[in-house]
Image (cartoon, rainbow, N blue to C red; front, side, top):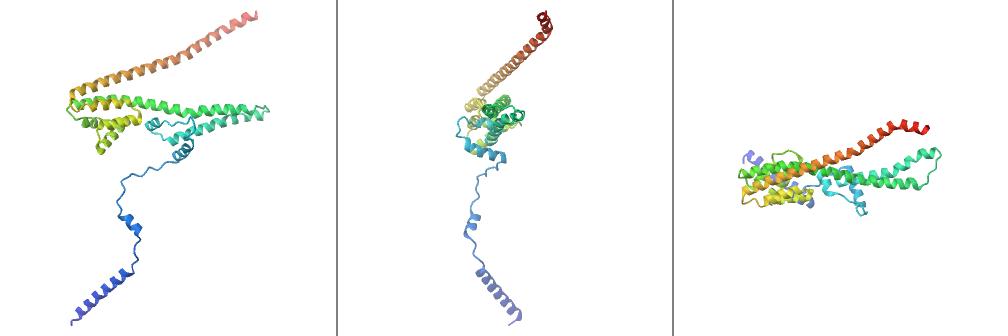
Length: 294
């Protein structure tokens, strides 16, 4: 027998025995990690991590949401991009500051030896705390009002673009999407996201606009959705309806701006009249004093 054949046969047998022993001595893997590795990947997106202020605010909100008078303007906060936790944390911090301000203000009086009844800083603190507690609601309402006005101005341009796309024989969904892709502001970004979701979920685009209008309380989107809902048959009629709604919306916005300008002018009337009265009193003061001294 050839020596090479003997060596090769022995090496092959030894390698097989070594592999068999290694396989028998290898520890059996745990079942749970193996199943976890073979499980399908979940398609659900993880919730975004909250910052510290939002987490503290939601902790406060969970304990104060049943208190009478505590109301969270969810739609307004979503429109301006502010979380409910930050909103509640701001309200609570301002209320605590309002309670402490009268107490701190009475310290100089106490040092000066002037004694005040204990109920005076308590009552004043409660009033100031209540006013400061309501201040964020007013601020959020004003910011949301300005945001809706800005969205209405953007909707005018969007309506014109949709009308032009429909006049060019574009379909309803194509007209809405192509017109939304032109803008770069946040109103167009909202519409783009709603239309993209409608395409992925296989729902009509006007339904997505209706849901977006209900989510952020944007009635102008309801008008666009209602017009485009009946746009599958007659493009010319839809074009006329879109241009007519654009003209009406422009007239409404101009009327609102004129009303705001008139209100600002009326607010300046009272300080101007008061200043005129003060000037007249200053001019008449020496003569009145001279007449009284005679």
